[in-house]
Image (cartoon, rainbow, N blue to C red; front, side, top):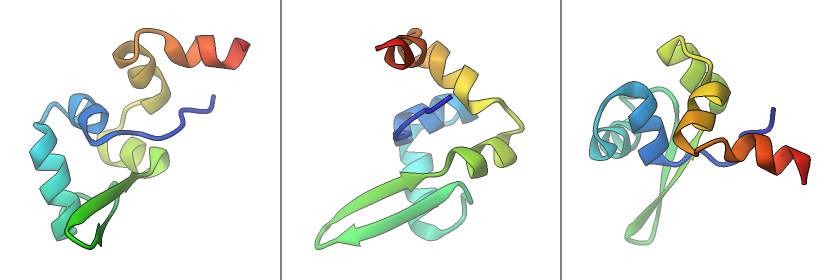
Length: 78
């Protein structure tokens, strides 16, 4: 199942933490689920499905489907 881009807010919901926790943790290299790159004054985030699954022990695709309201399944059918 293709999950696409994982947003910091979605990762935060899966981890049961705040979105700033995920953002700052990625920026400081303390939350090993992806990368944060500073583009001028703004950070861009990449969250890896594999790393998030390893870190949380959860099925990320299933968790995202719950968060996104079943939209993962709908996207596959189109």
